[in-house]
Image 1 (cartoon, rainbow, N blue to C red):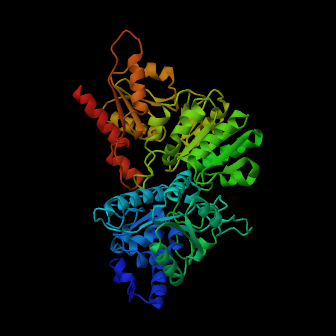
Image 2 (spheres, rainbow, N blue to C red; image 1 turned 90 degrees about the vertical axis):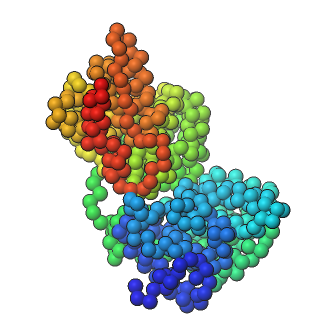
Image 3 (tube, one colour; image 1 turned 180 degrees about the vertical axis):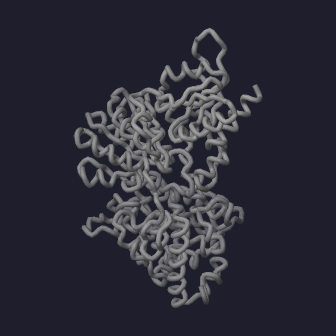
Length: 590
């Protein structure tokens, strides 16, 4: 861009030299850069379009990285990246080996916290304030601590716990509430002003002051000149202060402003002129779940659905439109969602909790002790399981299998095709003895013929051989089939089973035991996962002969970077050629 202001911004200090007219021009240029980059790479657009002026004001008032600025959630930090010297890398946003879509400590000293899960910033800020105050008596740096919370993150319980702690102790910090009235859908809260035409907004000032925090606002979040004096005043106070800022998600880009579902909160590659996604997305497991749930709910009035602030991305919007009194968005509050589901199940409802794998981890205690301990028939429908791709280590769903298989009485299903989803959801709702989980990946769901769909809680044998038995779960079934074909060219004959469900089918275990080698494949951590469970069960079978070696293939217990799922799986040896190569090497080493 000719005469680019942004190209001259090599750090936050450069922002302080700009006048009002230049700041307005810079804000417009930043929005152009955001739209252009995200239209190619995909990413979080609406949140960042709405946080442009707020970010400029924060970096003009506070001295990052000396002053700690923590973003909650980190997906609204793209503008922060641009004004902290990372324009050159922005063209490879969310691409393998390129810039992260969240704050990254490896990228910049300005990214203090790699904050990509909601509702945590205020807790980080409290800890940072404690550490600052502890060092002041020894000549430490009297820096500011700023938490920027928004995009619905103030609906999460952790944020309230931290606010309560700040109010009770009076520790000095600035908490910026970036109120755009939404997370994905409209925010479930009486503390928000933006986006609520009904006027039923509660009284934020009374709430925060009752907790013991100062309150300022609301302030126009798109007016740098209005924001700066408010932030400067807040920085001088010796108490915690909430600065309530009103912004519009998707500001300055009509396709985002008019997207009723989520203001283009997140989006894949799209046409920047229209905001319309480009490329064929294919069938998704989420769509299969959506259609199956609606069909079942039409016949069964006891079915209800629960989401933690993500009705669109989990496929529940059509359900909520069809059954508005049977769909519950509780905000970004996964723990509450699960325990509320337990209460519903106690009185005869059949709650279906639609949630991402990575966010289910936040409600582990509730799943085990509020649902599992009571043997309640809550159905967990777990989206984005396994390697998810561009959002990186915090969003890969790698732990659900290892966790779910440790819940006593829980039944697990993993569909390997679009058609399996309906069969498995129907079976899940037949189970009343305890919790049930269905987990599926973000990647495109393959379609199969009726003969390639399992039934009930049985495993499905895909092909038969004598040299090795491959037990594969979910999307790994397709990779196992490819591996078997490749092994066949080496005169190695493989049996392939679609595990489908845990507890495992005894017939599958017995068949696996007859082979000289057993290999399991799952798209979750191998340590303590399904493969480890099956290895123990195959070894425990009493057949009068020695058990074969069982090798569990899965992801390492490590933080896996962002990248395309297929490439990441290939690098981990979890695609067809990788599984085939591992099997061939194991057979050679015998």
